[in-house]
Length: 145
Ligand code: ZN
Image (cartoon, rainbow, N blue to C red):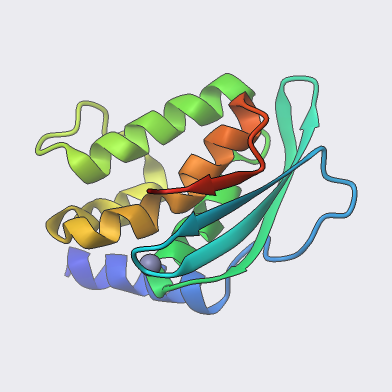
């Protein structure tokens, strides 16, 4: 039951990704690439001081990478830079740790099933790695490799 629900959320976000558009006035634009699967995305972030005022993405990838990017943009919009990075660390834990310490991830919990498929973990984390780069470094292209 729960797994069906998770599947439904991922399918919904992969078919109708939210915040899926370019942002000409973004303060940061970073590209992410997952060569294992071929997922590519460009992430646009508009920072207002320390706050992610707006965020969007464009790109092409598998259902998991697209759904993850879509849910990520919904999740971090309005958050501070630090909150977004903390969220990323928790999300990474969720996908790679047997018993993740903090479960307070809301909708992002739908990706917990990805843990069973190590090859897809990079699909799910691509958008987050790209976000981290957008928020913390000056790199313009991020690869999961
Ligand atoms: Zn993928």
